[in-house]
Image (cartoon, rainbow, N blue to C red):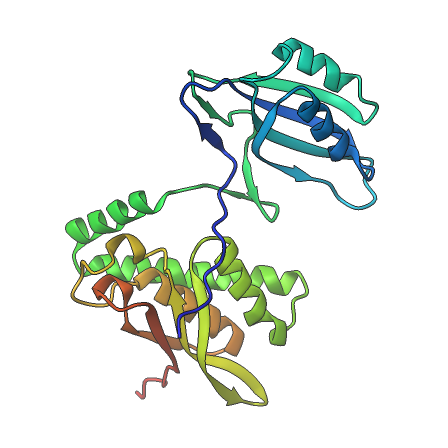
Length: 272
């Protein structure tokens, strides 16, 4: 059965709308109930359509922050008039307004760096990932799979280390990591089979639906191609179990399967 697909989440980094007048509002607010409601009500009063954005505020802190793109084409007042009206609100502490770089296209150049759960992040679209991985194959051949696998192993180890430092217990670890995989856009994990060892349940067979590594190459390869994700799973499992774990990919989106499926197995020690 296919894993339940999530509603898509578009990062509010820009808006393209030909023949519309677009602006971006960046507002520091008092962190009180109804503050954002006052702002949106004021803009609605003047015929401004809020398109997308985000807000951030922490419990107990005095101030919060919102930024959003808006269509002011049909506004009853000028942009200067809108800014003046918002500044009159007692919940507004600071206001900045950015106009579109070119008509009909506005991109968020007001915020840097991009953060994901407090860590600096970058955005690389799937088309670019497909070209990057294909180029690795062209230049390094089978060596590309080793490079990607080893990158994945270290990435998986780091995920576990960070969660351990954050106090996440072993029973909670897989649930949190599955949620992180979805939030990061890596894919939708599904544990198909568990193994029991020392009273602890650990995944043995794992499916990744919509695997970001293979999605841009779907149906274009003859062999399993998820070397990075295979390494990630190996790094995670080895770190959690305290011994080397090898991971095989037995089904792959890149070779036409509906998902990528991995089998994790304990690595037997080499006898001298």
